[in-house]
Length: 483
Image (spheres, rainbow, N blue to C red):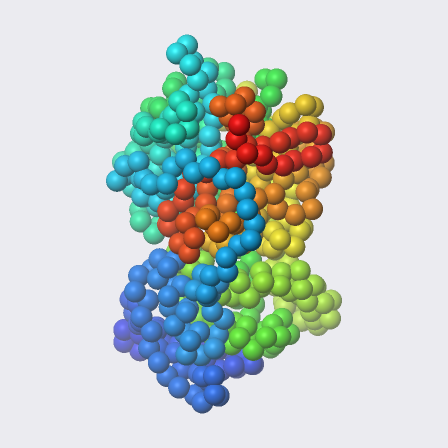
């Protein structure tokens, strides 16, 4: 049973579902910057308090959730709890720890590094995520991985793809990857389409690594897809990508709990999580009107309530699905369960790199406890007749994000995963993720990745470029110190 929204001038009132375990009312100002919450505090007394959303950013909403938690004993966001110093250690080498230009706003998330030979010696080329910055995908180069020069952007301001959305808070230019193929340079990337803001994968081409890049009027692949990776071998090329279902299930679950609040107590045994779900469920009529990333910001405590015990929640949903008698509820639960798997697909590219041919193959999906609700950001490297797939797992905005690895005898698998993460957060660097692999200065394979400064994680926070040398030998994957 869901609640009825009441609207008056300049604000709207959203009550929790009548059958939710806790009764909250949330009154949202017209501009969304102030929310008055009425509900039971830690003592059980019903109180009302207003909270400001200082800005519609990840950290703005984390501060809002933290303030609500302190008053109403809802779940405290992980990024607002006292920091737990990771015990894991790794010989990470920082390469870029500040922006090369004022036009680079958020550092070097999702870094793709390649090594390109030249008459005057090799260059390392880097492209990186830019989120909603005016200039999309910074391009930088270095001879030695120590000194870097910004050469430009794949899409400078005013030169975005015709099909892609643009603007602060509305566009997300993610995970570019550059490759030299057939005498040209191709950058595969993700962005949101103008119509509907669904994520899609595009490709841009240029005669040199620093451009100028041109791109078709339509994306290469549509339908909520990101993190394009291209494996080129012996004249063949395959596109790997992630189906971005982890951006789908929180909305599906939110809607389900709004319409059937009785399920909250079934899914969440902890008092703080029942409070969190009851309060956030109330906001569904408002949240569904927000932009995609603002959805993510609002959902953060609910997502953490699920991912903190992900396998248990999935199992509980499966039990509820089996015994549910209402067909519409069964269908809604089934949709949530399906979206809780994030598949990695692969398919052969056409010779020009602008299309796909043949059938797609399921390569990998999240099935280890440490990965929780997602895997993403894959990169495949071949060595000694084996194929090594590196990937990121868990929530990118927390210190639980890490890098895993899998090994196969063929490009499309089947891949055998390592039993746990290869790389995790350390005391110095949090949330290592989105790996790429290139030949290092010592001639061996080096892995390149991003990470946050400790305690400074979140969307649009600075991510540094790090590297660590690799060992790839048979089914063994490890890291080593630089020589």
